Length: 396
Image (cartoon, rainbow, N blue to C red; front, top):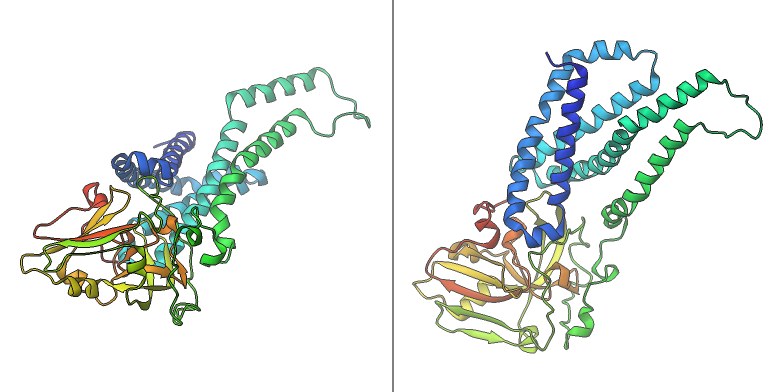
């Protein structure tokens, strides 16, 4: 049987590896520069997560005896309960995210928030705990005890208020807090701000880059959906393309009877529809009741005239890298849209604007950002993330 000390060490090692792989998974830079490696890291993270359950299972039968040994050590008991709470919350939320297709998107969204919160609590605490339980810290404490045995201190008003051990612990805690506060703030900030496009500045000033600006429909501004609920997380596989009214182009070609292309002014003049739909990312987060305004994909396809040889609709991003496809049958769905406005505002550059595909009933990797070309093809094409391990079955 494994001893408590061995279980403690194995648990610490597994948690450290999970923390490192988890931080890699949320890194935009890693997603951009090493997308294939990210898929492997994701798989490792999941499997190590399963393995991390074992120390908890082995510890279960020992819990009562361990608590008995800590009955007079209140601080240690509280520490034990805290660690168990964090670990169990991470395991449960991780399982919900791993098997997200078996649950509703709202369950996945809640699980992702819990997983994030427990990570931002657990990682700083792991570092603090590792430092304060390190050999260096123990050696410092041992020297202090030896000194106290040799010479009992006289407590006078000019003596330090804190002993060395307390000072080091508090100093370590303060240093860890200072290091992690900016990261936690950046993660938490979107949850405490009003999620409206007008209050969230775009990395590129869209109103200055595009003339004319599309005039929103009365159903779009104010949004008939009441305004979106939830927070977008912004990802890209390359640097964001700098799109403006001069370099913007949109075309449809391939197996169509009437290939067409539009510049910005011509595209703005196209008839648009308004719809309210939810937006789901395969990583677990969702945004609800988004009011989109744009052109139905089926209308663009009907206008171009689908050749009988066409089997798939391929979508290109202006970043020059990202592509994905839908079958002809999928592409003719009533709610699939080439969108320009979100909640009455031109879609931000970081959110795939000014024009992006919206496929509400599929995960967001199908909703191609910075859409600038549609091609009808006679063969199956594997999209960017699907080449790297994502499921071709993207239905939510």
